[in-house]
Image (tube, rainbow, N blue to C red; front, side, top):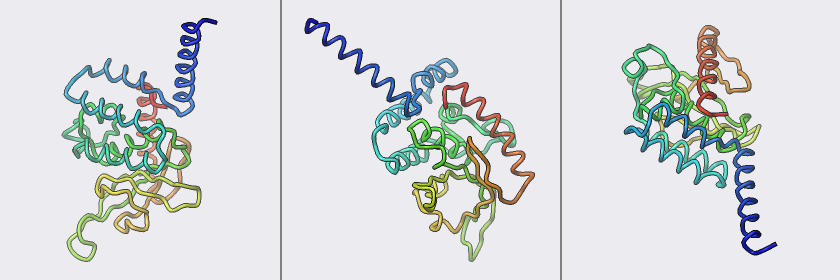
Length: 222
């Protein structure tokens, strides 16, 4: 075999290995990019999406904890909070990650959902991630405060570990014990549901969740 042919063979092997590793980790960024471009083009929000692509590619080989920190920080920094009705003309809408990035805005569910799918794409196992519906105390618990429904993403470093909370209200990733302002109601992911109180709320949320899964998979998310 000549040197040039050997180089070509090695190059082909490297490309195959990169593709195999990407597939093994759940990466489908090229399809996701094409989905974004076909739906939105290079609009103003293209910068947010491009930054997300860079973060995703740069985070393939870092530790899980670092992936969690980077993804939490990215969405908390890049996405502006906005209620559903002025954003979608609906009282309640769960946006896909691409929809959130295209608008550059979203509410608590949209933050949590975008973080969830991003970490799955980075190879974090599904059994380590749960979307958690909580009652959040906003304000001083001993003074003027209100309680409202809220959603966060929980990351479990190990099956018996205390979950780490990814939130848009408190931008730091903190252990659940450090978030007494959050009262869990129920949690779920693409594999199951963990019961709590509020059956009607669960039913409505899971209906939205099934719809969201269908739309997100159409965008290229696994």
